[in-house]
Image (cartoon, rainbow, N blue to C red; front, top):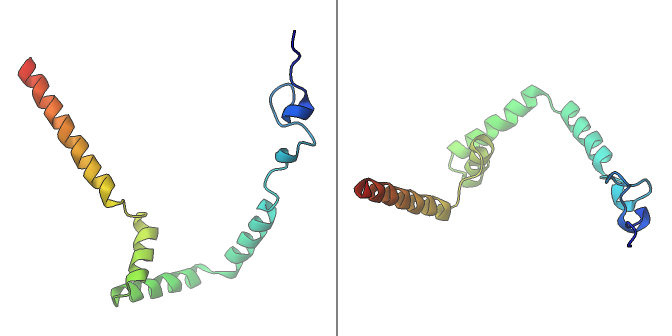
Amino acid sequence: MSEAPSVISTGRSANGTSALGHKLAEGNRRAAKVQTLRSALLQAVSPADLRGVVRRLADAAKNGEVSAAKLLFDRLLGPALPLDIEERMAALEEKLTQKTTSRKVDS
């Protein structure tokens, strides 16, 4: 009869959680530092500062700066879908329409 794998070989305790001392169970070591830096950044920038930055970005976009317009739209509306996805969606809609039409004819 084979024995269950040991905690040392799997890094898991009997209930399946990460065992103490397992090197992959340490989590993200940089998370605390990143959180400290984010906190400092948020404290350094006021809402008025942010409004000013966004206003300048919008002005640059209005003046024809394409990169500013892209950044503004990406942040406000989300990234644009690639064209091939739109084409694939149109093809799928066409197939669904054809199936629906063929089912009506068969009935």
